[in-house]
Length: 383
Image (tube, rainbow, N blue to C red; front, side, top):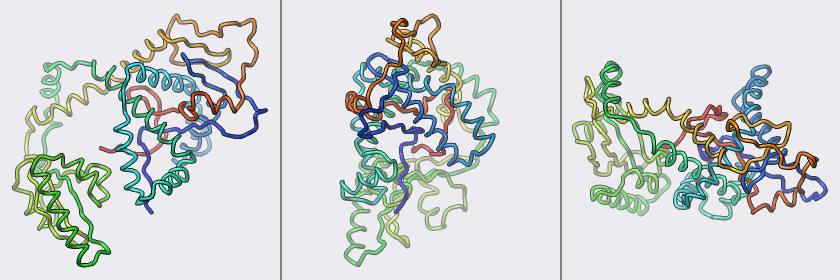
């Protein structure tokens, strides 16, 4: 069974212990509007980060230095996440559809059709219940939507800047001839004659739908039996001679958007779509404008996101217990505990933690695009 590829933006999963020992309490170290962060949350974050680093073969002094780099920002990152999740809810941003599609893709990739068995599989792979894992996925998508909408969507790159970059870096945009393709594979492995006939019919139906204008990428995700399905069927680019001759002949001289007839190959019926045919020589500005925009956005996102998070802090009810430091603190904002005279360890029972708004695992550190948070895993994002 293939290993499940879990959500690329989910770097550190932090759960709340469900132990039944009511006598054990957790110290609250920060209050963020209506949510809290406990010392146990921070401890679990440290352990999770250490585990991620060890999986990447960090050892000895190198591991200690990496942990120290992450250590100083653990509380900051937790506060960041809560503020972004709260902002998303304030803006009434809904990600239910995206989450459902993502979970469906995971289930298809796992090869487990039975819902209960799939949920057990999720628990085996993550150490989390299916409900908690799904909640974390939802919070991660919500966080990214807030950043795209409230930060990225409000950054403006002028056409003059794009033109200036293109003129100054033309050598970056000299290209070899390549054809970029997407694929859908309808497998015939292990099928009898009737099964092969059914696969042939399915492939022909998919071609007809694609030629009528249905989104090929989504069709690949939902119907392809190839490993590229999770990447929307993307095959990347090929130079002359890199494809099998029969496949090259089918696509090389075809225009952008062309969809082939189903082609019988060893393990099924293959459908290819020409995403773009890149010509040799200097690329026109129109061809590389999006690439240039990305290059210009990248160095601006980090300070813009940090500025946005600072504003969220300034507007938030935020209290942090003495001895804990928020490295993203807003200048001039007091975050001291409201009653220093009664500053004793404020605690809650594990039962209270587990029942707080049924958010057992809402507090987790995911990568904030544009911040200086260091990634601790090697997952690649799907296209």
